[in-house]
Length: 560
Image (cartoon, rainbow, N blue to C red; front, side):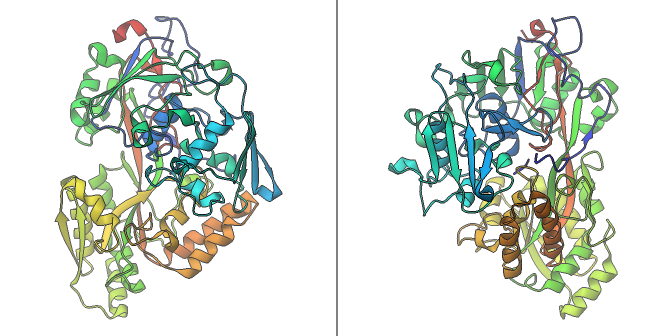
């Protein structure tokens, strides 16, 4: 969901000081001789929640994907540390396409081993791809299902295997795709294309103990409490130029988060000097960091490449009317929403759906609506639609989203919309906003590209064929536009990646004209870390979160 063709540059790093993200490309030095990361010690990661999934077939949360791919498992290709440049990982190259991009062949490197010393085989990658089809193993990327010839295949747990993936020997894997996929080198950066040996299959319990092909293995995993990683002694750095694997141990403490975590990291005392925050800085603490030069130097900040959106439910009144949807576009006060998000240090107002990483680095503004809205234009559109204010609409959110919902409410009210905010338990929000029969008139959401291609963004939120009775499938506007579906298919069939990129820009304009998606902001990912941590830089692929490939400690002894 986020993600190089070498054609596009992803989101721009905002460096708060020259040393804020320093050390990412530095070579390890002996402790005490400089500020670069060295080998050894224990890196502590503060996080107040558990991972959504660590099973590579199910891992589709951006920061969790970055964590798993950098530390626990390798994929056929991956991203160079801190960049969107695709480089070989398990494979010897970026893949060899044939038949116009419908067949892709990869050869595995020699010397890649699991944590028990057994070799990684092509059949293990095939097996994990097959697992991604299993109805028991939900939540993961669906590109394999989209691209591979599957004939209603439902995974290997029932004893069947895919004919569209060949493994003629232990080092060769061949993918037969339904259609040409020009960017398949990028697709196989996803954890779906990591190896899982069939004898280690544990169904849903594999989430608790993925079998490592990366530089670390799990020593202990107590759900919602702690994850401890130690070195995979069979990982060979000669086969892996991307991951430096500097700490001896990585401990994820799941009881420290939010303002309490950031307060400790600002204080920078004792073992906390060797810690890093897994999630972004709490808004309540951010001003304290920005007025503290020493703490500011220890915060990495990067635009995350994910567009925040308001989805308008096109399946029911009043947003089944395009003019009413456009009225909402003009009524929204995006500046107020930016303030609710935390202000300019946290969010940038946008006027287009696709982030700059998918538009050649350019931030587009398609409708050219002022950031504070155009109330008179909104009122005129409602009049043209024949709709009399107050236009009653509803949304559901948790208490954590209350301030942002109220900012939206105030902006819409100016034009004649009457937004009711239903505050529900955070555990219930997904069920309400994700189920078509229960969905209110609008909801907050957003999308992140899985790799730098419009194919990982617009189809995911606009294709009507994703919608099922029980789930919107990503199309939270429930938009059903045959012309858009047809255009998606046309672009998907292109074999020229440059031509496809231009076509996605045209489709974006077509989608914006429906009024069903209101782009709001691009969010900046801010992560704080201790003074003994070095090599921190955000990765534009994984929402700007710190890239664990090169993070280490300046002095391992300080982590004790």
